[in-house]
Amino acid sequence: MTERTISVDRVEQLINVFGSFDENLRIIETELGVKVLDRDAELRISGEDEEKVAWAEKAIEGLLDLAARGENITAQNVRYIIRLATEGKAEKIAEMAEGVVCITAKGKPIKAKTLGQKAYIDAIKNNTVTVAVGPAGTGKTYLAVAAAVTAFRAKQVNRIILTRPAVEAGEKLGFLPGDLQNKVDPYLRPLYDALFDMFGPETYQKYLEKGNIEVAPLAYMRGRTLDDSFIILDEAQNTSREQMKMFLTRLGFNSKIVITGDETQIDLPTDKVSGLKEAVKVLDKIEDVAICRLTAADVVRHVLVQRIIEAYEKYEKTRPEALPRPNTNRRHSR
Image (cartoon, rainbow, N blue to C red; front, side):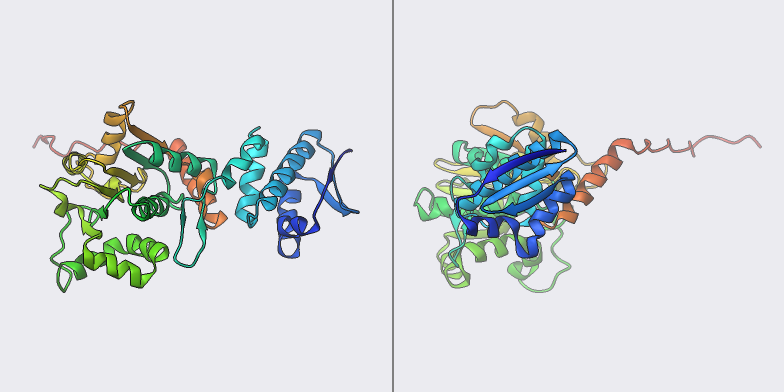
């Protein structure tokens, strides 16, 4: 049996770390096979496996550090920090509490919740073009919009332009009723939601009417040069190679571009190359262009989303290749 002790200065930090009904503590005990007891301002961690006890100690110390910095500890935080501890990256836990990306209309600070998200935010700050590739739930779009709002509030740009392919393939808008705005609204809803969070509905509407915010389908970017703008292309996996090249060449002076997408959710016809996949190869190692790859570890939605993504990744690596189609053009003898 191995035992380690952690001294705790403030009891309220323990309440934050342990969570409601000690649910966070139960996660640590279950995930690492240890027992944690609170005795006289000390935490005693015990277990049969010395390495797992050490991981639990590192994880709890990291959580206490985040609590001391005013961070609210959630079950997602706990699982992610356990993962960092087991990977020998516990010393990087404090980086997640550094820097606020944006303050929402309700006063909520937006921060990176994983190291991958922190690297993504830093890439946006330090590069003119940033390409973020990763699965659903990693905050690609939301953090990009937060960075755009921050740049706009600081008067670094005059406009925020959000765009995405209006439909999964082909941008055929005619089947929806109403004017252009009515047609594209369903496809651009995630972008609207993020803007509403950051600005609030009234401020958003004001900037939209003044032309400081533009939300439009990708097809309407052709022929334009976008100066003094923060431009976000969302769902970029569903762009063709021609659309991607067209979009990238819209970049004007004093502008930033962020491109987000998920290479595992391409809805283009099988004979079309994804503009996102090609751009990642073409733009790699070009100065002032950053390629960020987020993974299942960066998922900040329900823990089940992370498990589903990991399960699909495992399946894709192990599934057999599709069998070749039979030759139906072969002539048959009479």
